[in-house]
Image (cartoon, rainbow, N blue to C red):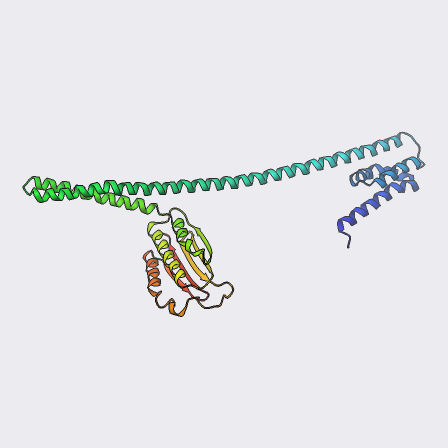
Length: 327
């Protein structure tokens, strides 16, 4: 096995340190470089060089005077400084590790908080939809029926009382009731339309596919989708899913509804991933151009009703691509 570059550098450093502490034994004036080398010796844990430096100090023929004592003290200071530097490096590494762990945990907490906020917003939105549906039903079943009964009663009174000015006054009351009834109908329809959850509706329609197909469902749209586009997407998805169940022999189904800055895109594709250049997967007796023609025409009509465009491909399976511009 080839020696790593780092290992080579360490071996060379060990050898150089040993040479530096041995040289004063042959040339005593070089003893002055020993305190300088001692810092690296302690840092690299070169015990052989440390032992040889002690032997060199005791065996070198130099006068044991103040200079010698100064050299000893400088060597000791170098050793202590090296140990302190190493300890500081260890503490810095621990600090960096703790900081990185803290940053990672903070990011995870932020992600979890965002998920919780998103889940809470979804719960609030679903609760609002349910409440709107409930209010629409209450208005329709109670107020609407009451007003309808009042209008019928007013019609009967108009038929009985034809004399003036009673007849004119009853006619004004009837018109007021008609206006109130129209307002309530409009409000109920608006509440019902706003309560339509497109992702939930499509997910419910896709449920029958899971028993027979490998379904890849991806829906990414906001809650502010216009009402006509909601009905268009749900209607097209329903028609396509029905056609897949009736006609397709392919194993895979992709359904994607996405929102872009300028448009909404709906893609529904049933295909065979193992035979990408195979035929459409529809039997001859149930070819798209025969009894599916009316369904495809309905899809085209729905798309064009919201200024959308339809693209159909039969290269691998059957693919519907609908683009609808945002208002």
